[in-house]
Structure formats: structure tokens, C-alpha cells
Image (cartoon, rainbow, N blue to C red; front, side, top):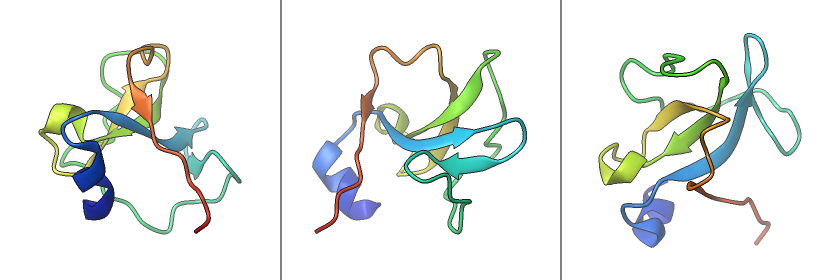
Length: 85
């Protein structure tokens, strides 16, 4: 994550993590998490009915930690894609 944050700066990005009713999954293949980096008190389902998406580096103040977000309120948020190297 430090490598990615060095590239994206203070911008906020979706990381492709979604939630069904109770569990979090990676959107590309619906695998369960084997690593987490939640900010303290996250995920907290705050501020919306559709809090099933995850951002990283919320406006540069979260030091690469994750926060859940309302999926209906993402129009101005960038995203990070996975690519084989």
C-alpha cells in the first residue's frame, strides 16, 4: 500500500472491496479477505444505507487505511485496478 500511496498522493480511491449482507469480498473474483487494513473504528457502516464499498487514503488523512463508504455516493471518487505484472 505504501507504494500505491506514493503514486496517488492525497486522493481518495476505491479499492475494489465490496460487502454482501455480512462479509467483505474482492470484487474481481469474490474471494474472502486474507488481509485487512481498516482504520480504527472501521468498518462502521456510517452515513448511508448502502455502505458496502471501501476507500483508501480518504483525502490523504488516513495513512493508507481503509474506510467503508456509501456505494451510492461515489461519483467523484477515483479507483485503483489490479493488473498482473
